[in-house]
Length: 132
Image 1 (cartoon, rainbow, N blue to C red):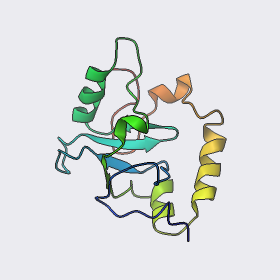
Image 2 (cartoon, helix red, strand yellow):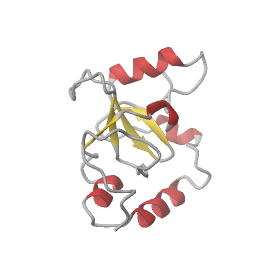
Image 3 (cartoon, rainbow, N blue to C red):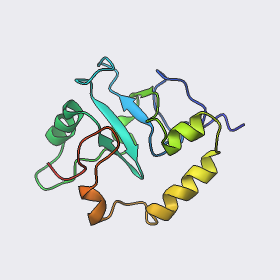
Image 4 (tube, rainbow, N blue to C red):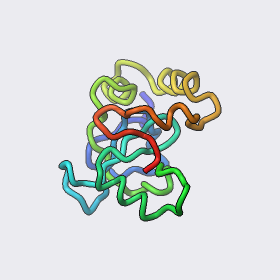
């Protein structure tokens, strides 16, 4: 079993954890509730899942930039249970391996970037991915 992909809710996110679509993180200063700064892995980036997270990233961005977080921007944030039914949920429960999940992601986001159409999609349990 690949120990780099095993996680437990509450551990800090860092380079040893392979993020998969559906993984969720919370800012270490927040409680896990609707006002916590929670982000959701959506392909190659972390997107705000709560309004508080959206506001947090908006303050960190200059006008006209996307409100998406990189792995470096969320390093140290704490793992939450992944979005139910997501690729991350299947990886973390052992239903599929991380290579299968990453292959599925590569088919959807072949260049590792979100295309213009993805910016208007809704993320599961969250807000629109459109620019704010």
